[in-house]
Amino acid sequence: MRASQILLAALTGLGSLVEAYPNPDTTMDKRNSSATDRLVFAHFMIGITSDRTSANDYDDDMKRAKSIGIDAFALNIGVDPYTDTQLGYAYDSAAKNGMSVFISFDFNWWHTSQASEIGQKIAQYGVKPAQLKIDNKVFVSSFSGDGLDVAALRSAATGVELFFAPNFHPALGTDLSGVDGLLNWMAWPNNGNNKAPTPGANVTVQAGDEAYTKALGNKAYIAPASAWFSTHFGPEVSYSKNWVFPSDSLWFDRWNEILALGPRFVEIVTWNDYGESHYIGPLSSPHTDDGASKWVNDMPHNGWLDMAKPFIAAFKAGAKSVDSYVTSDELIYWYRPTPRGVNCDSTDTCMVTASNTSGNYFMGRPNGWEDMNDSVFVVSLFTSAATIQVTSGNNTQSIDAKAGANIYTVPMGVGDQSFSVTRSGKTVFSGKSLKPIIDGCVCGLYNFNAYVGSLPAGFSDPLGSAGIASLTSGLHVTTCSATPSLGVAAASLTPAAVAAQPTA
Ligand SMILES: *[C@@H]1O[C@H](CO)[C@@H](O)[C@H](O)[C@H]1NC(C)=O
Ligand SMILES: *[C@@H]1O[C@H](CO)[C@@H](O)[C@H](O)[C@H]1NC(C)=O
Ligand SMILES: *[C@@H]1O[C@H](CO)[C@@H](O)[C@H](O)[C@H]1NC(C)=O
Ligand SMILES: *[C@@H]1O[C@H](CO)[C@@H](O)[C@H](O)[C@H]1NC(C)=O
Ligand SMILES: *[C@@H]1O[C@H](CO)[C@@H](O)[C@H](O)[C@H]1NC(C)=O
Image (cartoon, rainbow, N blue to C red; front, side, top):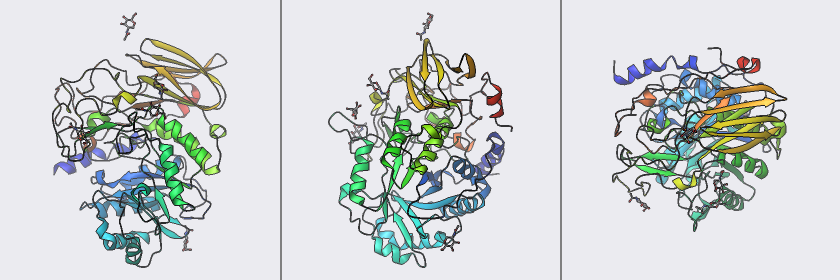
């Protein structure tokens, strides 16, 4: 067996770890949406799924995304040799599972001179049953691509009419006359140059909304929504990059902004980009390791997916408040695994020079680290008011939470993280997080990714062996091995919480 086959054999047991899904919904098929439909997409990186061997390997992602109200995956493709194989699997799985998909051409790899090849690729996939169609046109998007000849693209896409909504940038003065809509990628507060804000250059996500909607007029806006951004690639890879964007309460704040704004489309950035820590899909979703497992191992984000569900429902209903779309009780919490001030200089991977041709590499703590607060963030999704108790290390705080969706912060304390919810003196649910906060360095690193937990506790979600293969590459400590190490939740469960547990 080749190494990749051994890894694949190890991955095949993963399905059983994933919780059961509700039955596929019977709501209107969204593939021929009318002009008034609001849809939600999630950006999906095909570039890390070369290890998938059949359409079945996409089924869990399709079902899970659909179950929370995501209508389509934006399939991000480069030019890797496995791209067509994986696109075929994804389209087939989407068709089986009542999901839609569309291609998002990544212009880190494609060139704007390739309008004709891109048009042909669209024509090849646009006729497949799972293709997302808007106003009966084949939906297509991109990452970047300013300067592409849109008329040439349309004429090369033989036999299909396009709804072309790329990630062009109005600020670059790009001719927008040929597009039907635009995706704004910048889901994070930034400095206007793809790095953390500074006091002199501080661009909100809403400023991006304003620039795009102004440039678009009546054309469709795909508003971005992201939960987090942290990346920490050192010289162990050729694409060294090391920065964060302010992310603390972003996921909650951004969804409220989306409800207020009411764009036609929302794109969640992303489903499975582990390298930049903005995944909301499972760790166990089969993928290869680009080196991200160093900060991704034992860091599930599934609670963020749960949090999005009532917001997506509210968005599609045109509601400005999520509160009446919260239909069951859940507590979602997140925090970084260490206080931001811990000193990892002697063991971190980004303490030496590395290629910086991208301008994305910084030494030591990630650029922008000062923007991340030492807090535990708690989102309550409550059907009626309840009291939350949070114990973060030595800090205990009691919070009277209203019905609906609300966010609270508690100062981060080193040690165990425990949560309970009571209503009229009775415990609704309580439990200890699987991940304590440590006064140290995870695998020797500055790890600014977030651990996300929930009550009732989520399903066990370890990285598969392909997803963790590069964990020790370049590490400066020997105390860390390439194995998931979270236990299984031992929450004190109420009967309702027991019923919500996976049966697998
Ligand atoms: C979408 O519209 C096309 C063209 O009108 C039609 O052939 C197709 O059956 C429709 N698909 C769905 C899922 O309604
Ligand atoms: C950027 O502005 C926000 C308010 O919009 C503020 O909270 C934040 O501290 C500012 N960041 C910097 C680095 O100045
Ligand atoms: C982070 O801390 C600063 C300073 O205490 C505070 O102004 C800000 O609101 C905090 N941000 C979040 C998301 O809690
Ligand atoms: C990498 O380039 C960026 C942009 O020029 C710069 O801000 C940063 O300091 C550089 N990093 C290092 C380690 O020199
Ligand atoms: C927590 O409290 C205990 C007992 O007072 C103390 O020994 C310990 O140092 C405290 N831990 C932290 C992280 O403050």
